[in-house]
Image (cartoon, rainbow, N blue to C red; front, side, top):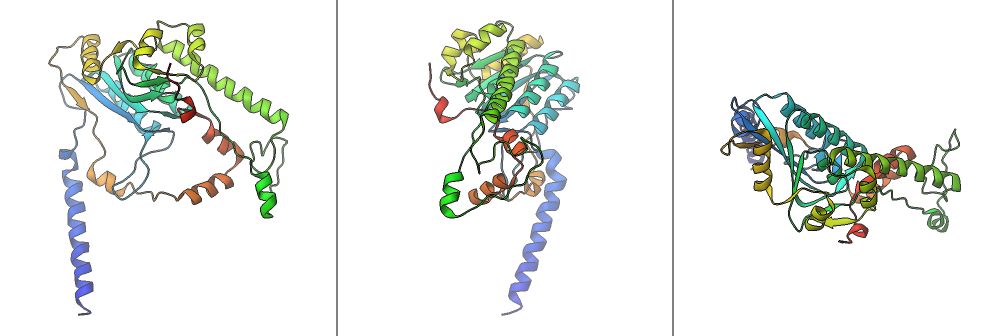
Amino acid sequence: MSLKAPRAFLLFLLFFIVIVALAWVLAPYWSNSASGSGTGHLALLHIEGVISGGSGGGGLLGGEAGASAITICDRLYSALEDDSIKGVVLRINSPGGSAAASDEIFRAVRAVSAQKPVVVSMGDVAASGGYYIASGADYICANGATLTGSIGVVFNLLNWEEAAGKLGIEDMTLTAGQYKDIGSPWREMTADERAMLTDLMTEVHDQFIAAVAEGRANLDEEQVRALATGMIYTGERALEVGLIDELGGLRAAETKARELAGVGEDTPVMEFREPSFFEQLFAIEAPASPELAALRRLAADPLLRFSQGLCLNTTLRDLVVR
């Protein structure tokens, strides 16, 4: 009886190794890569979830999924360099995320757009950072009920000084530099610090506005500024104010991309491949518990907390559809 368990484990281990080996060998055949097909086509690229500057991912055995600026920019620049790709369709379904990552993807979209048409198809939501990215394209399609816009910046900060005092918890932070612990949750923010953070957020907001004005030829900076209140618009309302170009779904975006690329109606749209089975299997990053994540944020440098909290992100407070 005692020998059966090790034998079963060895059989399972052997089976696992065989499956992994097969996945490694067959991965190129399972993928539906948009690059290197040898004939002219359009590339379809998905931007799904919260936008981040990290590597993103999320394997079959765990990890967080989202819109990684590293992955998305890599695919955009690959599409730019691939002569068989005549244009790009971006399917965006994102409430936003990191300000820096959104700008990085926007710049990649603009680089592709300078040489090949880029058409956006908005899903349920393409707001804040999601709209930041979309504004860099040549043409934007959205459904009537799509939530978009939300051109603004938000920074959330907690202050638990009073609660910590009641629990007998004392902050022992040591700093060298007047503003080194700016944004610390252990004390009240000073007037100078509040003014500094407000100036930083205003600067990011101005960059957001300038980027939208750069991408949207039909809107100048003052027109964008008038819309940049953080307000969310439906697709129908966004069309009225000039934030999008057409009401329609993915098929409409593909049709427009063919038109702008000057290719035939039968030109295929090929999706950039998703990570292979092997890649997903080993993209493992155990998700942290909410408690552990909170402790990590607490222990992080205040500047890091600020950069991570400075988001172009749609929140429930923004869901006021005009």
